[in-house]
Image 1: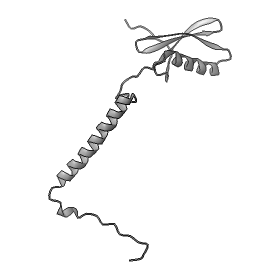
Image 2: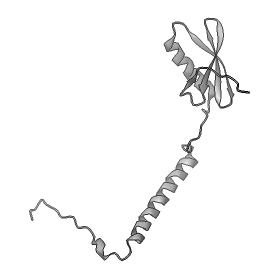
Image 3: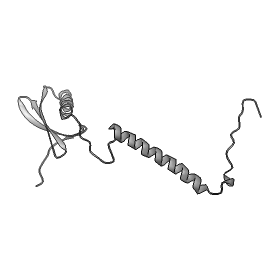
Image 4: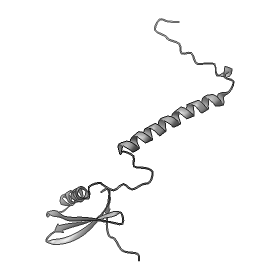
Length: 120
């Protein structure tokens, strides 16, 4: 064998009497690590859960973000007047060409909603 070469020796898995014990231990270590990571994220406030909707903690900031987007899309100035929350969405009242218009958004501010109509 050359000086630069090295050899990797793998354990002889044929000598293991119960391979299920080894796989169970590996699975257990991975499960404990996953639980620890989830717990740390949960208690630090970074955990959002599975399929949960997290509201933005600052509705005014979400409203201002939407107004900033609208200002880049229009030829006139859009101003934020009021933000109210209902049924999991924000109604953002904006002043556009001397008219107050409602704009609807998800609470995380990622989606604009074209219109809201009551079903009952």
